[in-house]
Amino acid sequence: MATSARAVNLNSFRKKVAVHKRRMRAFLTRTENKPPRGLDDMVKDIDREVWAEVDCLTCSNCCRKMTPTFTDGDVKRISKYLVMSPETFRERWLRLDRNGDWMNRSQPCQFLDIKTNMCSIYDVRPRDCAGFPHLTRRKMTDYMKWHRQNIEYCPATFKMVEKMMERMTILKKQAQ
Ligand code: SF4
Ligand code: SF4
Image (cartoon, rainbow, N blue to C red):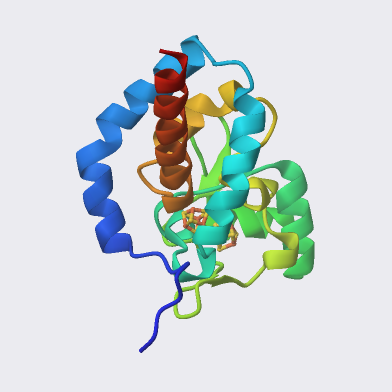
């Protein structure tokens, strides 16, 4: 069967994570502490490259291995869509974490179709899902803590950090 150039290979992704995650996390921490000039513009540019190379419909690792945070607005909107009360929705699928946030009780997410990798509540999905993996949300440095976590789960985030490291190495060489 032919595979698209944008198809995600989760096996090779996991191997790469095991080898590179410590180095990447250290890089993100250094960049957070001392962001180079033009960082946000660089990341916007990299973001375009990343999505030309990654197809989420061949991955869905975030929906399988992580949980979104469900705000009260999310619960209201999704429960209405599913024609049930917010209380029933929370009872059936969610749990409170130690920070008082509502999270999925089990994984993969109950709304993921594991055969097609599609979200069955896509139009009303939690805002957290709609924005994930937050590559260009707000200032890059505001999301470093999440990127440090997400490189382990999200091939797009991993690729973004790889590309940042490559570009910064080139910039450093040019400055020498
Ligand atoms: S609600 Fe949809 S997008 Fe969000 S984790 Fe579940 S399946 Fe994925
Ligand atoms: S956002 Fe990341 S983890 Fe989620 S499907 Fe896309 S590449 Fe995979």
